Image (cartoon, rainbow, N blue to C red; front, side):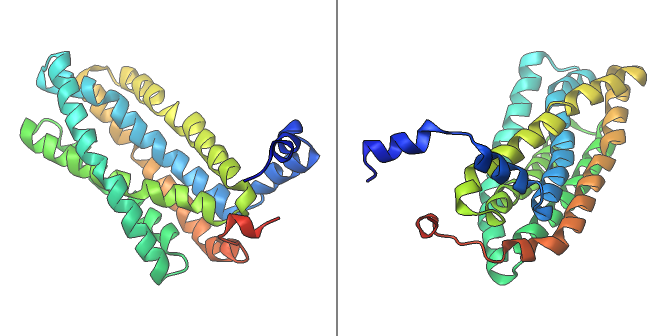
Length: 238
């Protein structure tokens, strides 16, 4: 284990020109930036739906807040299983194809866009059907998440993996997660509010999923080359 002096010397200057150069260098990794932009657009749509799901149940099916919240919680608890499954599956794809994780994220961003479109168009049908469709959508939408965060690790040197993850997480939540519910709410008001306004606003947000897929399609061409030369073992780097 490192002694006190080693740890102290490493933390005395937590940020210097070398650190800055390393961080700026992350912006030159095309697959990383394109994947982050793609996932930002994806989170914009996913968080937008999640933020307004209880209100949509209340407006469309006249449920009280407790019932709408319970149904929404059930949907996303079951949907979270998709994250675990997605991690396992994307690792297997990567073993078979050097662009496997990127392809996996692309496929299930497209898949999740389709399931959301079906869900939005189906609102007004029987509540049980909507709940089933929403669970399927949440499951499929979560499949891509582990692949994206693995990509942030695949294309950077070991010493920058935590920084890369932090950069990606901040980018997607500041640009996508923070604005999805806000924009959908504003568009809903412009469309007259209520259940029709909210479902209409959600339908107008579907192109965000297509934009996410486009970023992944472009980034796919750079991913394998960006992975080349990256050493997996942290201790192998001085």
